[in-house]
Image (cartoon, rainbow, N blue to C red; front, side, top):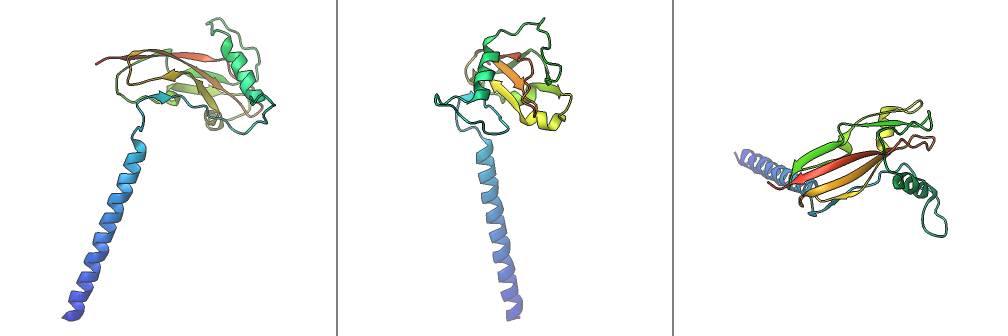
Length: 164
C-alpha cells in the first residue's frame, strides 16, 4: 500500500512539473510572438556579408541605394534578362490601425533563370518604414537578388493604414 502511495505521489509530482514546464514554454513562445514595439520597421534580409569600404557602406548597399533612387515606372524594361522577376500580390494594401502586417507576405512570386523560388525568397529586401499603429500612407520598395548578385526591378507597395 505504501508503495502505491509513493508511486502515485511521484507520478503526481512529475505531472505537475510537466504542466509547469509546458505553461512556461507557452508563455515564452507567446511573448516572442507579440510585438514589443508599436512601430514596425522593415528589415533587409541579406544572404551574406559583403566587405565594407572605409566609409562603412558595403558595395551591395551602394548598388541597392542607386537602384532605389530611381523612380519605379510601369514602363520600366528588364535591363538584365538574368535578373530575377519579382511580383507583388498588389500595388496597394489597406489595413486598419493595430492589425498585423508582414511585408514579405505581399510578394506573390519570384522567378529567376537559375535560382529556385525558395532561395530567392531568402534574399528579398524591403525598404521603407511604416507604423501599423499610426494612420497614414507608407511606401515600401521591394527588391529580390539572385545568387549571381543580379537585382530585380524595384516594385513599390503602398500601405494604407486607416483609423478604425
